Amino acid sequence: MDAPPTSLPTVDITPSALLQSTEDIVNRIQNSTANLVDSASPQQVNFDNTIRPLAKIDNDVKSSVQYIALFQAVSLSSELRGASSTAVSIIDKAYLAIFQHEGLFGLVDTVYRSPSCLQVDEEDSRLLDRFHRMFVDNGIQLVGSVRERYSWISRCLIDLRIAFMDNLRNDPGCVWKTKYELEGVSLAGLEIGSDSRYRIPLTRPIIGSILGNCRDANTRAETFLKSQTLYQEKNVPIFREIMILRNEAARLLGFSSFATQKLRSQLVKSPNKVSSLLNEISLALQQLAQQEVRILQQRLDTPLRLSDFDFYHNQMLRKEYYIGQELLAEYFPGEVTVRHMLDIFETLFALAIKELDEIPQNCKWHPDVTVYEAWEANKSVFIGYLDIDIYPRPGKYNHAANFNIYPVQMGSGLLLPQPWYVMFKDLRWPTGPSAASRSDYNIS
Image (cartoon, rainbow, N blue to C red; front, side):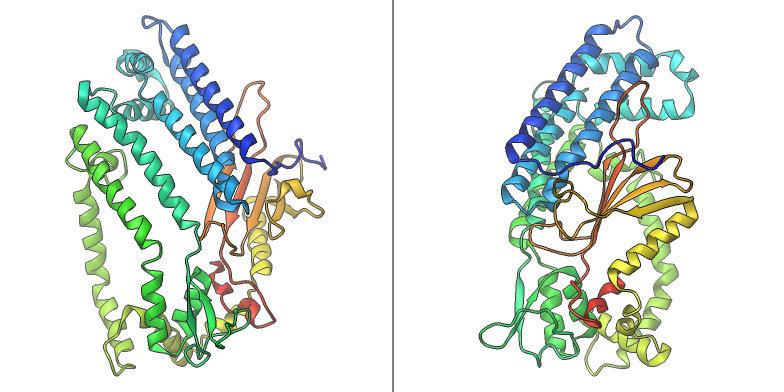
């Protein structure tokens, strides 16, 4: 087989088309849920006729919403980003409604309490436990005004989370500095103002370069403080409201805290066990950390600040271990490093990952995007598509991230989209042989 069984996914969608697609998804969710409840008899429900159909609805939502959400993170159009955020909120609330549906919970609860559920295999048992817990965690057993309050909180938390993430895609701002205040930092590619000062965008690769290389302690301190307070005016109130509402919701369910509620189904099980683990790690590393701080402090005439740590750590690597991060980075330019990283995956997992040329414009949201096909090594089986987008730009998600747009699914007689995976990174744009790699050690 030389060609994939399906064509490349397209991304040339309009805001109105995105919202229409969202409406179609919600209608499909609601109809599927109603059909499941109407077709099942409480006296005859079992894992196969109740939990498996619910799992298909769950898969349908999760295989649809990531495509809708992608445009929040990558689109050059503010209108499309806004439509994507609106659409995600609509779908999340429709998904929430599945696990607040009393009729559906009655069926799931019957299966959960039936002796026959003990006969299912381990994976099926975990799925049943998860679905039942999701109903409970979404307030299905609450009554009256308490349930109404809980439902309001659940919907409000969806909107707050989306608003928080939308703010992270805004311009993080900048500082302006003279070349003397930026001594040690590559100035290539930086905008110069009318007063001969340089504009320093508060993006992650630039912040890393300033903190690791700038010799001016005041510049490092200002950059560090600003980087720690990005979006503070808008997001701190949102974060505070999320914390308050999560705590209230957990207490309405009978838990002492949100952490207690969430951790009960995790490996560590309780906040006390998390604290115990962190304390154990802290005690084990405390002596080593104090030793490293003393070594760094010996190089300073003033107390060590957090904003100084990266700079003096780099100095120590250069002088004592002969490791220069920037010199080392020249051997690892971003795009070349990505290709070699994929080569490693090819070897480890017996894959063939091929970069595609001449990609149609409607299959890339920006010219920077590189698209790959992934196959079994002998090209007998097509695995999926991989899009890599490694340079920052306005409107793009301001952090490293990955999105499983179309996850792998197994279906009987169903035509399912091929898996599609997107990886983001924020490497500094290359502007010359040396500047191209100055911050590209962030590729890790």
